[in-house]
Image (cartoon, rainbow, N blue to C red; front, top):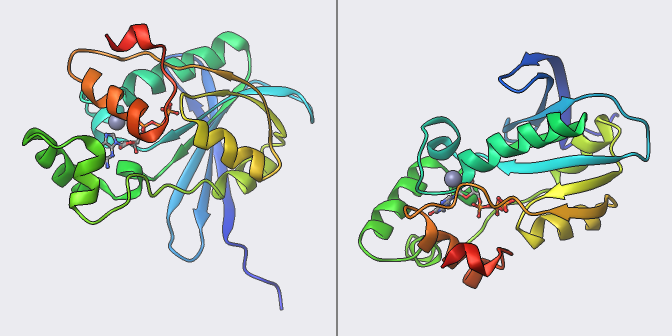
Length: 204
Ligand SMILES: Nc1nc2c(ncn2[C@@H]2O[C@H](COP(=O)(O)OP(=O)(O)OP(=O)(O)O)[C@@H](O)[C@H]2O)c(=O)[nH]1
Ligand SMILES: [Zn+2]
């Protein structure tokens, strides 16, 4: 009997955007029906170094213009970078709130409004600071014929996760757009407690 794959590719379609003509590719985690998408731009051959961003869902930042975090600005900058470089991939993973979900993120925001930091808020709600997993990236990147990347991130865990699945991270591009007075404290906490790498000058 055929073994059921944990993740499956579903379909692709063209996706024109403000920055250029992308293609969107849909994937599903079969057990949970959790859906993820990849956006691709341009053409490449096996072994080419592909500009890539792994972006975690943030409804408030990505779709509702929140400046409480840097996600929306990072998403825009990543798509712009990809088009400027002529090719690239954005993996958009549906792991809202670092994996705790939207409503728990709102609970965590409420606790942060009362003075807890982003990590303390998660812990107060009974969650680890970061529940995200990246194993779905392997099938997504295999399907897209990507083996080597220039990764746009400040989060070293993403690099480690890719390397553990056999993807070569040839270089890293920092993506430090979107830091404002509304989120500087949050970003400082990410640096101090979650290991994100930011230029210290940007956090003063
Ligand atoms: N639990 C929780 N999640 C948050 C909070 N603020 C943003 N997020 C989520 O954090 C995720 C983005 O993670 P970040 O830590 O900002 O960045 P990253 O993806 O680890 O790293 P980069 O690649 O450098 O952007 C998204 O899923 C957001 O919804 C918060 O205060 N609490
Ligand atoms: Zn966000």
